[in-house]
Length: 305
Image: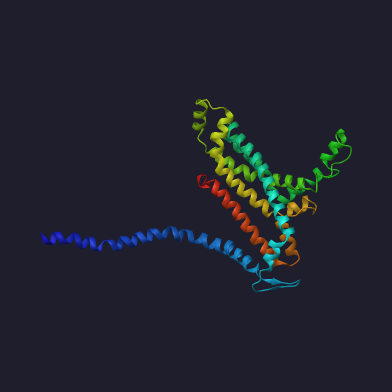
């Protein structure tokens, strides 16, 4: 009887070790699965960012760079009114383009999600929106020049119809042209996540709101917009990041009359001022991360993921 009572104690004492090993192996599996992605991100994302941060503290002259630790690159970047004005101009572009792409993107996504009944037609129309992406961004941007130019299609139509006596000068090589080209280039980055979010909304919620007596505007404001916030936040991150990093559109569509941070960095690199460009890159990265963090504080995009 005593032996029978002692036997379970012996088994219990011996069993936790294999159980712990099996549990440890099971807990290690997710880390092993994530290791390749971590290595790829580390080599192609984190290492270049660290190198840029290191180079931003180097000294340089007209011919080469000198490894060291100096802070005048950041002093010149943050202490110059021209630099601050360039950052403010970049933020202005980001704000205007974001507002326009959000308005257009939500309108298009709402139409596709709620006014096109056939799923096949929704996919066809959505693919039509993606057709311009079969061509290069540069080609689509340059295509606006013969449209907005002094002798372009718009000015020819305005002068020919008698609405204006002479061609309108501000259509091209101006902030208007820059914003127009950016809206054309980046609206789809707003349409796609919003459309994906709207398609996930349970239509029973809309029917329940309609049965409760809510008007179409009330349904849009109190039901659809709150549920579409994750998609709007993801689209905002895409658009703001792309606008802040764009230099070719600003350079071509403004005719060199406007500036952006990315264009300033491009000019610095063409003059072999790599440490100064790296300092601007670090400041721009911090600014973009702060904007993204602010968006994530307002909207929980995990609902979309």
